[in-house]
Amino acid sequence: MTDKPLALVTGGAHRVGKAFALHLAKMGYSIALHYRGSVTDAEKTTKEIRAMGVECMPIRADLTAIERVDFLFALVDEFQADLKVVVNSASVMPAGDIRDLELHNWDAALNLNMRAPFLIAQYAVRRMKAGGTIINISDIGAQKAWSRFPSYTVSKAGLDSLTKVLARALAPDIRVNAIAPGLVLPSDIVTPEKWNSLIEKLPIKRPAALEELTLTLEFLIKNEYITGQTIVVDGGYSLV
Image 1 (cartoon, helix red, strand yellow):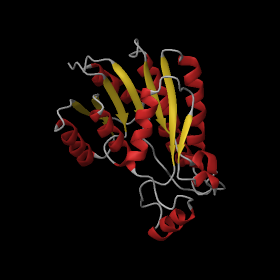
Image 2: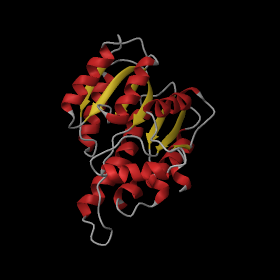
Image 3: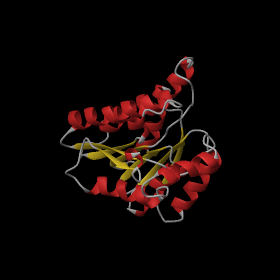
């Protein structure tokens, strides 16, 4: 049991999700840290949060399976704390050609990137009797129509729409917004040469710092007059 408000971060073991979890811990939230396969990263992030004197429970779950979402929230309930913030950061980004895209590619992206946030919102609402906020992590790709990542792009566009639907349905007690980052951290799906080329095209000429995303998260939590919005943090990527 904790006397601090509780935040649930999905995909919180590493990369951007980890940055959100650490920032929420600094803001005074206990952390329910969801992860799926990144066991070592989850253990490391949990240690970092606990070293701050903040309670943190790592929870392993496949969010594409409803019984595992149920399991996730059964453990969230063990905190016996008010769930005030949910950050839906877990995501998958499969590549493919729309002309011969296999169904498992399509389902993998939509089930984790859009269906899971929908399910998590349903479970979270039942635990936010005194109000709260849900923040979905979208992507500027939702507006860019990336042909190399069709299922991912569609899933993030759907997440933006889901954000609006949830915001209208759950108001006034629960606010729902989204953050759409642009280029943040390199990954193995883009070559270093391609990454550098993309950065050079940006009006700001650099990737986003993690702090620039976490401060956006904090802004959306603290500003109680914003709901149903997708805040783009892309260094001008949407302009090119």
